[in-house]
Image 1 (cartoon, rainbow, N blue to C red):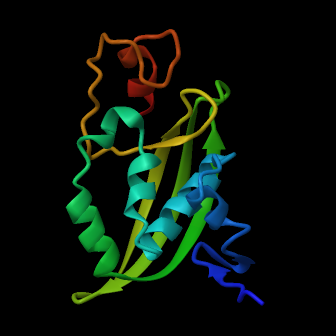
Image 2: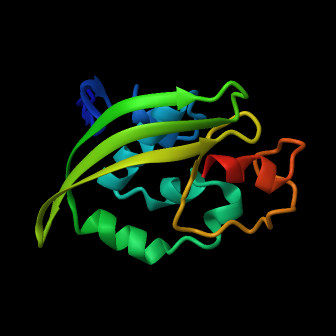
Length: 156
């Protein structure tokens, strides 16, 4: 008999039926589900998922070693999702959350409202610390027919 492990994003859910399915390749059906799966990926040191779930136009610029170190050098204490807001265009959304962790410097919490973009049939995290490869007048990486400055840039 296989032991059921609780999901890092919510102790009331088991991992395989919650974030585990996204880590195995299923597309997150909501921005909140993707946010939870990303948190669980940090807890489980699944750095490849962090990269794959970031907007493709940003993936090459991610500092994968820094992400790996933060994941491995932190004890993850919990996630609180405060709000999810999907825009009427169904391509842009925000998720407000608080992540709790502990490291050698002590306990920490980080509150953020993250932006999520859905270029086709799955959601991606937009990392505000990583430059987009798109110029302001280039087509938007979310796949809309608009220029970046008139689309995703307006949500940032």
